[in-house]
Length: 367
Ligand code: ADP
Image (cartoon, rainbow, N blue to C red):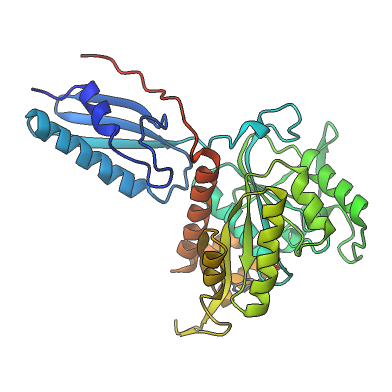
């Protein structure tokens, strides 16, 4: 008996999305499933272009269809899987009229228990990586006490522009970015009290013309004081990424940051261990701060570990020179950054869709 499209659907019902733990049909990810001669053509819409599980999903689909062909005694079949991606909205909060950023699908805060651990570096490179992987991405530098985006994105020669009373974001390195650092005198300290900081952040977030975005990465001020606390309540966050270095003292602060988000009801998407170890120019690895400390902290707090990033001179140099894309010219650094971004994207998909029943959207023609 030849394979039909309904056989393909039956086979695809046995293939689970490894992150979401449900089958592709139930999740509404199968957009087409048809036979053309002895070729099975399957179209799958991923929940993010930065999906780390693409290869696994492809091979699971091939296996399931071959097994089905064998079961019904169909002859040899070849399988072609085409992927598209559509970042879904996280939850009902983002649909309501009260949402100040209805055209942004996922808002991800990057926080840290203390300054200097690489929070802005991670935020910038997370945004650039997601954009390189195909997502429409924005970066909101909300670290109002120490905005880093002007330097890290090389914005010094660019002026701010407005249209219809909205700020136009800087379009650089494949992302859209906005920072308080371009709106105030960079050399004057920003001594703002809570309510002023609150107002400035809200204005920056909501009066920027972001357009349609899949991801908006928000670089929050460090720490667990009033300002990061109130700022993380102003936007409908999908969740927060906590950046931490491996030392015990840094872990203690990061633990407080994790608890702060949890108490606010903000999902902790996971912990990144930055400056995990140092790689010298000969590629030799040196353990400076107690590599693995943040990973153990994440495990004991039962939050996902998103990966480790070593201390690399090139990352610092490219951050200082405002050329983040140069990180992807390095033989390992770009891959390390992409791995982090993919892990974040997959936690975002889990936080948005995990455990929720999705209506199937596949319509099957009987043939
Ligand atoms: P934070 O936002 O937490 O205050 P930054 O992102 O500004 O920290 O980083 C502090 C400094 O450390 C910057 O000069 C940055 O370039 C550097 N840095 C951060 N992470 C790394 C890393 N993994 N390798 C090399 N330099 C790093």
